[in-house]
Length: 209
Ligand SMILES: CC(C)(COP(=O)(O)OP(=O)(O)OC[C@H]1O[C@@H](n2cnc3c(N)ncnc32)[C@H](O)[C@@H]1OP(=O)(O)O)[C@@H](O)C(=O)NCCC(=O)NCCS
Image 1 (cartoon, rainbow, N blue to C red):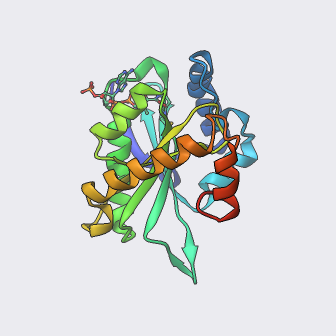
Image 2: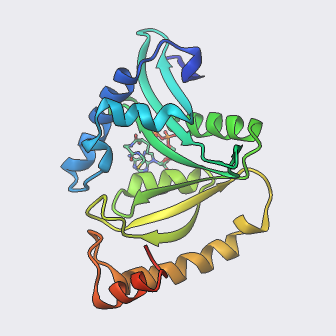
Image 3: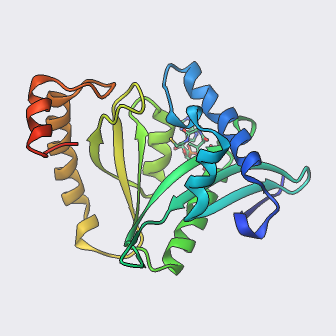
C-alpha cells in the first residue's frame, strides 16, 4: 500500500470526506466508553476547524481514498500568527492504524508549522485513550498538563510538541506544570468537568477555567 501525505489544499479531499473519516474513526472511541466531542460535530464544525489551520491528509494511492488526517489550528493576535498552534482532528482509518501513517501526518504538520515560524504545537487526549497517549509521546509530544474540560467524560492530558528550541517547552517545566495542574484539577473537578466546592472557589478566583 502506498500512502501519499499531502496538504489538504493540494488535493481534492472535501470537508465532507474529512467529516466521514472523523465520524468513522472516533465512533470506535465511543465503543471504548470514551466520549469524544468530534462525534457531535457537524460538517460546518469541521469547516470552521479547518478554516485557519494546517490540514494534512493521507491518501491511499491505489484507491484514492482518504485514510488519515490531522490539523493544526492557527490563532492570530494583532494580525500575526500566535507562536503555538493546536493539534486537532487527528484520525487514521482503523483498517490502516499502526502502519506509521499517523506518525507521517505529525511529521508533515511539524514541517508546515516550522515553515510558518511556529514555536510549538499544543494538543490534548483523553487519559483513557492509551494508544493515543503512547502515540503522542512516541512522536515527541511532552505532557504538560491535566484538564477536565467537560467536553468529554474523562480527564485529559495536555501536550506540547516543541518546534523551535525554547525554555518554555523544557521537559522539566512541562513536568512541573503537569504535576501542579494534576493536583489542582483532581481536587477541583470530576472527570466530566463538574466543579467540586474547591473548584468553584478557584474558578471564581480565575485560577482555573
Ligand atoms: C492515534 C492514531 C492517530 C495513531 O495513528 P497510527 O497511524 O495508528 O500510528 P502509528 O502507526 O504512526 O503509530 C506510532 C505509535 O503510536 C502508538 N500506537 C498506535 N496505535 C496503537 C495501538 N492501537 N495501541 C497501542 N499503541 C499504539 C505506538 O506507540 C506506535 O508505535 P509502535 O508502532 O512503535 O508501537 C490512530 O491510531 C487513530 O486514529 N486512533 C483513533 C483516534 C485517536 O485516538 N486520535 C487521536 C486524537 S485524540
